[in-house]
Length: 526
Image 1 (tube, rainbow, N blue to C red):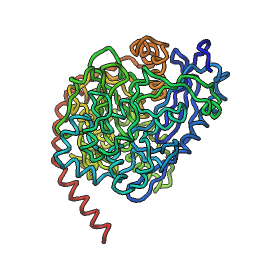
Image 2 (spheres, helix red, strand yellow):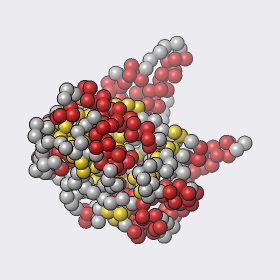
Image 3 (cartoon, rainbow, N blue to C red):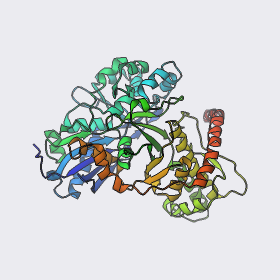
Image 4 (cartoon, helix red, strand yellow):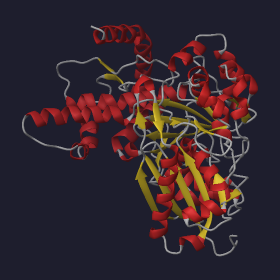
C-alpha cells in the first residue's frame, strides 16, 4: 500500500475529444511534465460517433507510462491521481465490467429527432426546471432513450451507464460512480446535485434508472488504486484516485472561474466557445425562456456554474484564414494559417470597429447557445464596396464577442471580470474586443493545461493538501492570471449600441435559415 509521506506530485488525466493527456503537478501547482496521445473515434452514418472503450484505457495507460519516463521517480512521488474527460456521451458496461458497445460521444447526434420531439412537448419545461440544462442529443439521457428504442439488446446487457472519465475511474479503482456535474445535466436535479427519477420519466427512460451509478464528490471522496491498475500503470497500489468533475468545469476551475470576487465569468476560446458564470447558490441560478445551456454543480460546496456554448468560435477565424490561403494559393503563393495569424492582431486592430456585423454560426451542426437551431448559419450584414479583408476579419472577431455577450446575457447579469483561456486567448485583438463587448475586465490564463490543473486541484483538496478550494486557487491559479485589462470605454459604448442590432438580426434570420436548409436538402435529393 502507498505511504503517506514524501509524496509531492498529483497526476491529472484529461481524456478529451482530441487528445488524452497526463500531466504531472507538484502540490504547489507547478507543472512538471505533460504527455499526450491523439484520441481516436469513428464517425459513422446516421449521426453515430463512437469511441473504442478498450483503446481509451490503453491510451490512458500509455500516457501515464510516458509521464513516468518524463518525471524522475514518479511512482515514489505520486500523492494522488485525478481524472476528468469529455462530457456527455454514453459508455455502457455489463455486470463483469466489460463494455457492451462502443462509447457514444457528445458528438453523436442519433438522438436528435427524439430531442426535438421532447423539446416541442409539454415535458420540456418541467424537465428544464429540474436539470437546469437544455435537452440536447449529446446528452446521456436522450442517447439512452435512443438505445432503448433501437438497440434493446445492448440495453439488456448493460449494468451501468458511464461517461468517459467514469469508465477510466472504474478501471483505476473498481468503483462504479459518476460526479455531480454529469449526473445532473444527464437527467438529474441540479438542486439535489444528483440523478432524478422524475427527470428520467420525462425523457422516457424511467426503466433505465437502474443503470445510473452512485454520485460521489471527488473534492471530498477518493478511492485507492487497485492492484490490477497498479500493475498496468506502474503506479503504487493504494494511491488515492479522485473522480473529477466534467472537463469543461475543470478547465474553468484551472483558468480562474472560482474566485471570492463576485461576478466572475470564464470563457474558453477553442473550436467552440464556452462561456461560464459562477453562481453561489441554487437560488441564484438563472433559467432562460429558450431552455438552453447547462447548470452544473461546481466542486465547491453550494456553488454552481452556468454555461452557454456557441458551436463555433475559432472555426470562424480558421474559415477566414483559409479563404485568404486559397486566394494566395491560386497565385502560387503558399502560406500556412500560422503565417497569417502572425499579422492578424495588427490587421484587426487597424480596422475601424463596427463596420460590418457578423453572426459566427459557421458550424455544420448549427447552434445550441443561447438558442437551439440546427439550421443556423453564418452571415455578414452591412457590406459595402469599401470593405476589405481586414474589415471582414474584425467583423468576425466582433461577432464572436457579441455571441459571448448573447450567451452571458442568457445566464443573468454580465460578469464584471472574465477570465479567458483556450487557443485564441493569446490574441490581443480578441481580448480587447471581447472586453469591450462585455464591458468587463479581461484576465488571460497563461496555464497551458487548465483542465488537467483543475482536476488536480480537486484532488489536492480531497487529500487535504489544502484546507479548501480558496486556498488552492490562490496558489494554483492566481500566479497564472494576467493583470486585469479594463475595457476601452468608447469601444464599449459603441458595442453596447450594436448588440441589440446583432440580436435582432439573429432573431429575424431564423426563417431564412430554415428556407436555405430546405433548399439545400432539396438539392441533395435531385
